[in-house]
Structures are given as structure tokens and as C-alpha cells.
Amino acid sequence: MTGELSEYHTAVRMLKEIPAKLKLIIVGNHDRTLDIGWISRESGPNITPEQQQCNTKMLNEAVKIMETEAKEAGVIYLQEGLSNYVLENRAMLRIYTSPYTPEFGGWGWAYERNEDRFNGAGEREPGTKGVDLAQRIPSFAESKDGKNIDIIMTHGPPRNVLDKVDAPDGNVGCSSLLKALGRARPTLFCCGHIHEGHGAEVAKWGEQGIVETRRVECDWPKLNKEAIEEGKETLLVNASIMNVEYQPTNKPWYIELDLLEAKV
Image: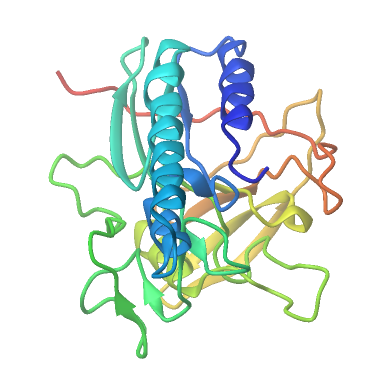
């Protein structure tokens, strides 16, 4: 995928056929024509008025697909931030989402390695800086209503978590995201982006981050049962469908979570 409008149409049609009551999606680095930051960088000082007009038109059409066509298909297109949903069974779902990943290869939805989108002032590592308009991930037990984040869904993985590539770079995840996860401690974290990292594990949190992990094997059609201790553990999932040859051979994940009842 390179952000062609036809690809968005195809994705929405596919998602429409999934029989789920709530369908939440984010985009990622390949969906560059939805990223006004990428459009601005591509425009540059030497762009012709005709090229600028073409880029702007593509951005507007892409956004229309994801916000209008997707909505009509029962799909909710989420950007960066926190969202709450009351399900049909009166359970409350709280989810944080972000399409951004560390810059690589000039793709979309990117930030520099020394930029921290996920932590606030006083929480960032030395040498990193905040990003204007970025949405900080809330900490565990921070909410006044007593509801913690159930799911954090970002396009890319945190550092050293299902992020190893078959290249000299090794682990390519985001250190700032890992730090934020250690603060938030959601029940479930899920990502994609690193095709080689497909898999799942349970992380146990300590004061300095992850202190222990255990691998979760996919035994489908049998269901695994993993006891996740709220505030102390997180189920980490890399749900990349594509393998390194960009073939959709990796298994999808089916996960059930216990959620608190919504307060009336």
C-alpha cells in the first residue's frame, strides 16, 4: 500500500463485511495521503501550483473516504487520542490510539526519534522533546472516574517489544512509547508495522518498565486463557497480517477482554 485512493476504498469495503458491532481503525505509515504533514513535506518549496492542487485534492478525497464512506460502512476512523465507547452490553471501552511511528524512509505519520508524542512534561527521557498537538497517554489510576485504559492501539510497537527486524537495525520500536505504556499499563496493547514481530506476549511491569515477559502461543481454534492482572500486566500483541514479503500469511488475533460496566 502506498496511499492510493483505490486502496482506501478496498479496505473500507472489506471492513464493512466484518460482522462486528463496533469497528475501530487507525492508519499507518503507508497511508501517507491521509497525513497532512506528509503532504506538506512533499509539496516543498519547488512544487508547481498544479502539483500542490493535486496533492490537496488527494488529501481531501482520502479524508472523505475515511470519514464518510467508512462511517456509512459502520467503521470508525480514529486518529491520535483517547476515546470512550459504551457497548451494547453496557460495558465501557476506553481506548487510546495513534497512527504515528518513528520516521523511516520518508513515509507518512512520522516523528523523529528525539520527539516524544506520548509523554508529558516531566515524564520524557532526557534528550527528547514534546510535539505540538500530540496527545499524551494518560497514566494508570489517573482518571477521576476510576476507569483505566483498556486498550492502547498504535501503528508501531514500543522498543524491544515485538519489534525486531531482519536487518542490522535490530529492535526498531519507540522508546518513548515504551515509557508511556509503563505509565498507562493497559490491559491490551496492539500494533502492527513490524511484520517480523507478529506474535504476542504478556509483560509484567515494575518501577523501571518491563521486568518479565511470557510468550503467548496461538492455539487457534483452541482459545488460550491468560490472566492479566490490572495495573501490573499487559497483553502485548503485534497483529501484522503481512509477512516480510508483503504477503498476508500471518494469523489474525481474536481476543476477549473483561470490561467494567459503564456508570450511568
